[in-house]
Image 1 (cartoon, rainbow, N blue to C red):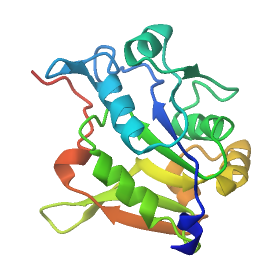
Image 2: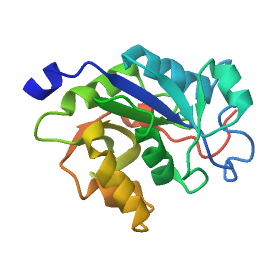
Image 3: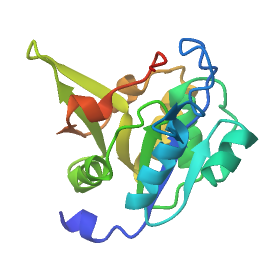
Length: 191
């Protein structure tokens, strides 16, 4: 907890890239109760971040709808790990919270718990949820990262790693149990 007491910068990146091919339309702009999933994600991050919140990937239309800057990087279009590696190049020293645009029901308290789970002994905090069969689902993209691990993430990417869970295995991880409903990934359109 002593390490966290010294953290003054918490940045946030909404992962907004991708083609939405499984979804069938632009996931970022898909509205739930009148608010697009991407805008919901930005608003939730703004509740917990002390510095910048931006879209990592996406379009100008997304950035305008969310009133958030659009960032891209050299790894754009190579998947979530590429987006994470690029986001580290924008984040201020401290903590980087990432949230995909297709998990719009995450609550600010869930993200606060991720941030507070980071200590001098943990480098990344990952959201997880219990399943009815007793198993645990890891939600690798709903996570908080100490920015000092940027080099580990970027080096893994350069060595050909493309999955976030493989990078997490290289770090000291803290799992944070959240309600399954708040971590629902909207891979298909709902009415």
